[in-house]
Image (cartoon, rainbow, N blue to C red; front, side):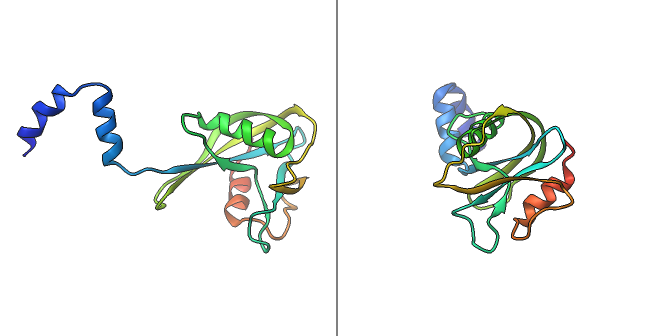
Length: 150
């Protein structure tokens, strides 16, 4: 069977090959999270309106748009949700194995902007030291904060 496929594969080089690969493989949403810190080392946490009421606190996060580079997702999401500007640093987390999504997290540093919350998604934004994180926080985000040293 492979001997029959090889000549066909070689004959359809270019965009058609990519289309075949795209159709044959899994599709995922990519959730991108930012561990945003200020100059004092405090971390930015948001109280999300659409998250479970018992765990509303977490890091800025959102899904990458089609064709968007993941660091740019963090810059966009933080700006949309808080009005703040950040510079993205190193990758601190990459996890697959979910049915429909992949998780990616980067360190980020506050570089400017004024706090202006997206009241549809975000109820509150506050800066916390890593040793004084709030109750009702996503466990995975707590681990990201403790494992990231931005």
